[in-house]
Image (cartoon, rainbow, N blue to C red; front, side, top):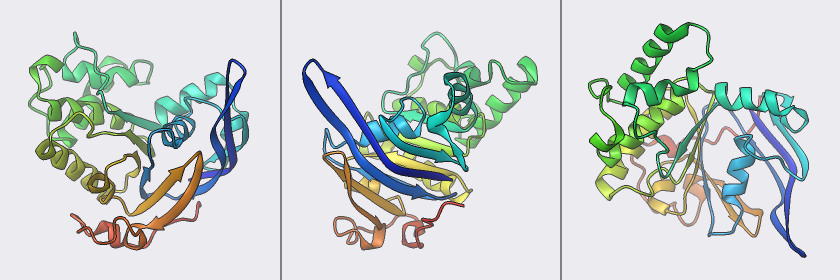
Length: 249
């Protein structure tokens, strides 16, 4: 599904050159659940931005389903972001004046099927995350966990092949975090490909594959059971013990 080859991302800040990514090569297959870990400044968020087609690499190639993303126009990339990739952010990024149903339907504003079709898909997505009875509530009427569930429903409404989550439990307490991670486990069992950035070991332990980054490079890429930092932690679903599907189709 995803193939990166020698991806480099370099920023110029005045006279200083910052190498955010330094030769990243990796593959992610369908229905993988991957956690990307690393300290602040390791390059994990930059990697997520490139995977999500929010930024372009300085050099190297990125292929998504066999198509070279690095050669696509800005308009084509926008279409991929809207249809193929779902985003979940730490800060939810919901519009405060819109209720849950309207927030979730936003990615479908230009989709075929019109208003009624968008409403139906948004309702289905909210049902999927357990908020089918909260569709008319605005963000300030929802708990932190419910707001994140709305954000996940919005990410899923266009039925993307890849779900990208950047510190999805960073603003949640431990009990609510466990609920959101349980939802990710459920989505993975249903066949959803998930790539999640986190610095927390207990969050990463839900994934089947752990990619660790340092100084813009991949320093390890292992199944969860083989990662020395996580192998002793219990798996909440058992899915993390499955073999890693590392080959792209």
